[in-house]
Image (cartoon, rainbow, N blue to C red):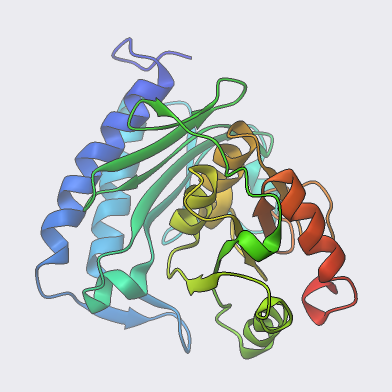
Length: 269
């Protein structure tokens, strides 16, 4: 698929992400306006501004493809992802961004009937562009990436994030407590998109979350799949954009985690 300017879809999306990243980088060092969407769920003025910039840029290059953003979601339920759709998270890790913690990213993904075709996840502070196209591998700044080759959980660095609701958060902690005597360490990432991208790049070995939205996980799902990893829902089934929870690792560690977590509340739907 070519953009209106004649570039490939991936090339155009990377440029859109780079341009939006410049705005995020400037906004990060300035005072932010913060509003609450829920008890622990916040949005900043930068979320709105950057999402609008991405929307306008994609509309200019791909006028016929509809847009779904975290802050301006145009649909409800899974049916709104039929056909071609841009799925965007202007800031994944808004709490980090708002608090001055330099760990967040922006996500742009393209799906066709809920199947992920391409995705980018850009960390503007580190200038790290994670990207993938279906069937063409996963890359970080033009270098091919792969999941780690660790053979066991006891060699692993594990990333997690906690759900906004207390119930999901407690269920996420449960596997960590069970694994703690064996694992090397665990990290609460503060950005699911980066947490998943780090698994794809082999920086961490396992990431799991109780419940994510399509814009949180669209890039990570494709990146890990193209990097040779396994991505499933909490039951071990093939992941979809609306799946309940996510577990991502290389094949050996994924298998071990699913066996170890059997019977835990984290696995129950």
